[in-house]
Each structure stands twice: as C-alpha cells, then as structure tokens.
Length: 139
Image 1 (tube, rainbow, N blue to C red):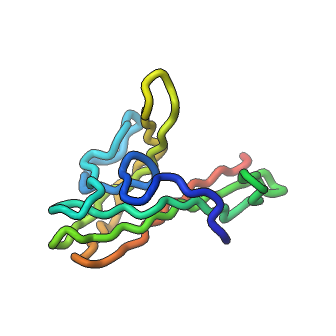
Image 2: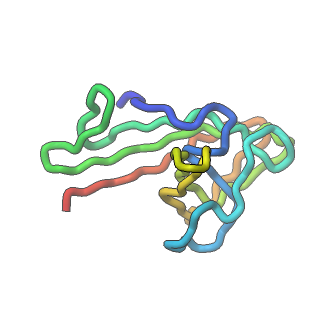
Image 3: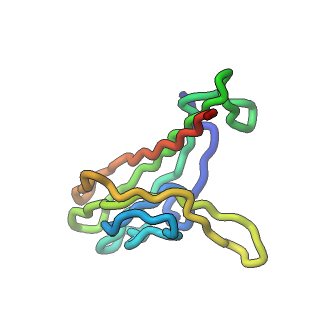
C-alpha cells in the first residue's frame, strides 16, 4: 500500500486531516471542527505533517483511484502530528478538510468530522499518526 497523493503541506492546518479538542457531537451542518488545534509549536498547538492518501480497497491507477471489480473503494488518510508545545495535548475530534478554487481563493470544505469515542493524548515531544478511512461501497 503506497501513498499516491499528498495533500496539505507540512505545518499547514488549512487542509488535509485536521484535529481538534471539541467534543460536541457531529451534525450534518458542521463546516469546521468545533475547536481546531492550530499547527505550530506554541502552547496548545501541534506541528502538522503531510497528509497522505492510500487506496486500501480498489485499484490505484497512474494518477487516480478506481473502484475494484465489485465497484467498491476505500481510502485511508494519514497524517503525523508532533507535539512541541511544552505539555500534553488531547485530541477529541478529527476531520478531513479540502481547499478548492472558487471566486474566493482558498475556500475550504469539511468533508468529514468525527468526535472520537476515546480521546487521544499526545505527550510533549511525541508524535502520533492519525488515520481516517473513507469507504465507498457500490450499493
């Protein structure tokens, strides 16, 4: 399983897999995380690594992902977060944010948001890889 696409650049919280400290349940009207954690090395911040996308079900084409013979596809989105803030940080929510071009440069769309069943704590000077899976069944 090799990474096919990188989104969001290093140290950017503008798109890709993003994390936050909010714990309000997800709704269909969510357009951002409740309390996003900003990328950086200051208090309450995490350094965001690159976002990578892997095909875990389906076929990886030359420059795209395609469904498998049954019409199913699954994508795994991965990002490493580094805590250099000076204290532990607890992640309660995760989301997938994309940038798109419109009449206003840098518009964003939140494709998914999930409040974690079990919060994830990253100690100071530690790394954590967060994963998010999108499944696209044929039926």
